[in-house]
Image (cartoon, rainbow, N blue to C red; front, side):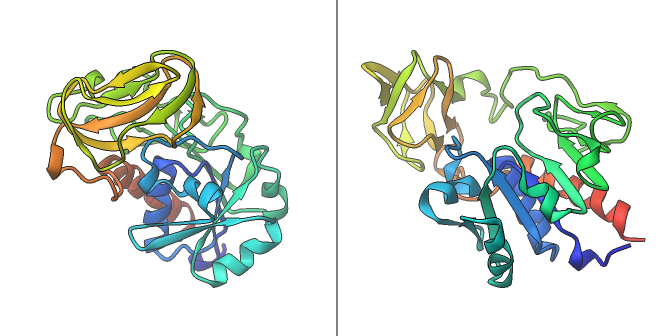
Length: 268
């Protein structure tokens, strides 16, 4: 049984949820983390998504810095600097060479894109699309509500509802979606306070307007090409009281459950 400090943990994805759990693990002194991403990740809550390092080289979330690793050989150097490496590796090919103790699928694709229990002694899936005991060793429930963060050791997570979580009584109205396929051009920034019917940007020539008052908590990168109905932003109805640059309570809860599952497996 390896010492906890020596565990190598690979996280598929580096979006909001993956970043929240990476921060939780990092603060628990798991420092051999590796995050795998595509070459053009698209995050809405960009201020709290380590995948932004793919574009900008580095990003710091709550005092923890992630750095783009151009090669698998650079991973060790980034670890030694006390940072989290983000490697562009959509095929997850680095897993074989790293021989990780834990693999976590945190892509939140609502389906399994190829993760299986043979990738590591412990494989964890977040949310719908995974079945504990079949393709992963355990599943973490990601649906808001009483079971959020539940560790499932047999069977699947709850099915995807397609309905965003409710904040201050608001659900569907807080999500910004592309009215058509095209290139998104922003007319606001993350952290801006906006009002109902305000134009927040365009997809090609079609305006994207706010359905509620609040704070822009998330927005995709400017000049991103999107399909119709793609989620491109998020308005928090709490307005100035909202936080756009800290990990969400949902990501913290899920991260805590991942931590619990790893400790249960390895802290013996």
